[in-house]
Amino acid sequence: METMLESLENAKIVDLTVELVSRLTRLNGSIEEGTRDVYNMPWIAEETVNERDGTIEHLVGTNAGTVAEWPIGGLSGHMGTHIQLGVGHNDNWSELPEGMLGIWDAPLQTYFGEAVVCMLDHLKGQPILPQHLGNVKEGDIVLLGSKWSGDDQPWIEGDTAFWLAEEKKIKMLGVGVPGISWETNTDAPEPNNSPTHRAMTGNNIPIVYPLDNLQALTQDRVFFLSLPLNVESMEGTWVRAIAIEDQS
Amino acid sequence: MISFDDYRVVDLSPRIKARVHRVDGTIEEGTNDPYGKPWVMQEGRFPGDNSLFTLYSAPTDDAVWHQERMTSHHGAHVQGGKGHIDHWPGMPEGMQGLWEMPLQTFVGPSSVVNLDHLEPMANDDSERYPLGEGFKMKSQKGDMRGQEIRPEHLSKIHRGDIVLMTSRYVGLEQPWLSEQTVQWLIEDRQIRMLGLEASGVQWQYALKVSAPANSPIRRMLLGANIPIAHPLVNIDTLSQDRGFYFGLPLNMPKLEASFIRAIAFEAPDKSA
Image 1 (tube, rainbow over the protein chains, first blue to last red):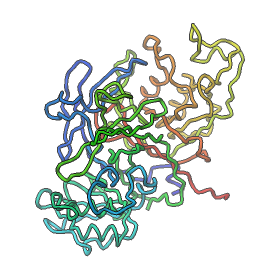
Image 2: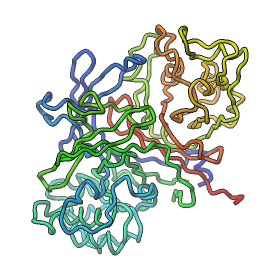
Image 3: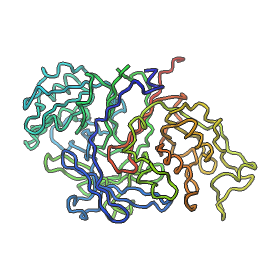
Image 4: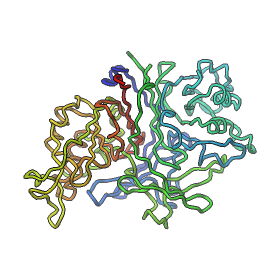
């Protein structure tokens, strides 16, 4: 570690963040199309001139009702790779515990540290059970991924989510999408809905997703970092999630 | 495995409290960033799972923000050259956007430069201060002004560092970055990134001068593909000359500046 303070030579930084190309309206009115994330969420921006110094800045989002494919106008904190906790997000659901935190309430140490990488390519279209996660240690950040998509993705069983949260007391859950179907029963009547959300946010464990590029990791354990913006009352925020592998 | 377990982590991003328009019609008041910009949000309900979300957007009749949209320059942010100032006359070819720079630009060993010892002075050099007040907006000999930051004040910066800079001074008493010193930072020290406290270092001047003489510090740094992160906080609380910095932009190609959460780690104090 002493050496890393002085050099990144032996550190391999792996970007785990989905690239989301802006749909950008230029000053001249031309529009450059962007991309969407796996949930069909865009990033929309428009150039404007800062009259103070003549720089160009981006206005984030668009005015409501002006872009047909994004009529709501504003962008939520859930565009692209993002992180979320319970307060302001799902604390309106019944039978969640007292003492839930907002993403801004949790200490900084929540958002970085040792992560276990669980690539579940062998679980095509199967439920993820505790026995598939034998390398998870108490207090880990857990990164789940697979090479599968659509109906072939392994999915997190509700009981497994509660096992991770309450028995393994994981620190954060990071999910590759596509790769993992991480939520079930989203439209079931409360309190039987969305068990992974309930298990994680109910235990103040942030969820970061959709992650990309997990297959580029070559080590079972990595340093992971995914810091929310420092905005109180923003229930989910965009992040740049990275892993660092030690190659010394 | 890489670990910062025994390290002290310092939050360098100012906390902003969002001003939130809730779905029930209530408004929660917020706070501003160090430059006075608010962060306004509108709450919505996602019918897919009955969860709530917040949009980075203000209603058209919001009392504190004059339009629906805010920029990517609210709160702590990092900016590069492409898309931001590459329309200015005299900028070099090959300027990069944030999205084109390697991640190592925003992560790594950092030097911490606290310039509290550069006390403002009232002498002949005062007229060189790049800002002023009064009718001519120029400083005069004998005015109380911040000192020029010179290379000899920055001797602890290593080649290739991310540099975090601060002082306790405000306004015209802030020490200032001159073109000569920035040239030295670029060519001699080859710094990777510059992070600046919200107040403490004067670097934004000559904003209205005709190009190519306008905003010289921004021009030089971004022209050399050295991004600038600001307004940061708590640099003054870093007690060691060296640390390890993280302040990564979002992965949004074409975004000329990006919100960041900037932090620094300090090694355990072995003398304690």
